[in-house]
Image (cartoon, rainbow, N blue to C red):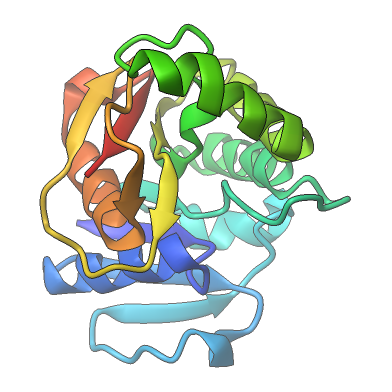
Amino acid sequence: MKLTVLGATGGVGRQIVTHALADGHKVTAAVRDPARLGVEHANLDVVRADALDAASLRGVVDGAEAVLSGMGQAGRTDPLKPASASARAVVDAMRATGARRLVVVSAAPLNRTGAGQPWFTHKLVVPVMWAALRELYTDLESMERILRDSGLDWTSVRPPRLTNAAGKGTYRHAVEAGPAGSAISRADVARAMLDFVTVPETVGHAVGVSN
């Protein structure tokens, strides 16, 4: 499969690239600084592009069977609003080129209903996280609204606390619910995102994932 990865030098994005190449996919990694990726492979094309600019992305999403974005979770505060700005840019670029499948990383606290989560997580942990990271989560909510209005075949993957632990290769997931667990490795988030590309039940939905 021909895949385009945005945010490929980030924690989740780099894992997506690594897993996709191991799976035998052809990968185009869109990055601002190609030297930062540090990955070489016969099936990898590293392209300089601005994930916040639709015109810059058209060439890298054109012909892609799926676009995967690790741009969701950035710093506590960022005036560029990278989650929503990148979503708007990639949606515009994909519409212009005819690309359809889009999978992005979001965050578990966007599950406002608490469906599939332990009581203490929904009632105690999530409110504290919103108080501390409101600007980040508000940007992610804007991102998900853009996806819902895009008309594309999108999936938003909502992990809880991210770790740098080695991937287990397995994960729990729930459509429009969860996640049940409190943490997941970046490697397993990437594994889930790649798996969901070909899972029709995830199209048009947010999916909670955890270890």
